[in-house]
Amino acid sequence: MDERDRVLVSDFGANALVMFDPTTEKFTDYLLHTPNGNVRQILGKLGEVWGAESGADKLVVIRT
Image (cartoon, rainbow, N blue to C red):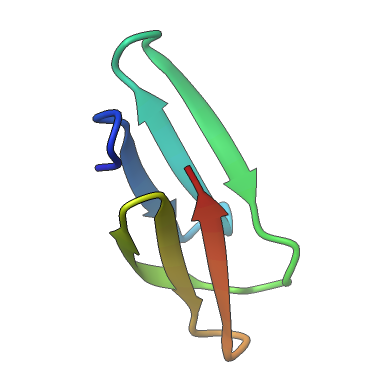
């Protein structure tokens, strides 16, 4: 969860990170541009969510 209580998850099958905002009850998809990025885990700190693209040896960050 981020500082505004939005929930973030990785969608392995869609090669994306997904954010759910409980205030608006809407989902936002952040599609990854690396083919087969395969984000399996996410972690964050205040203002940022990080995902490891295990299929591409890259990191992705979303600034919230």
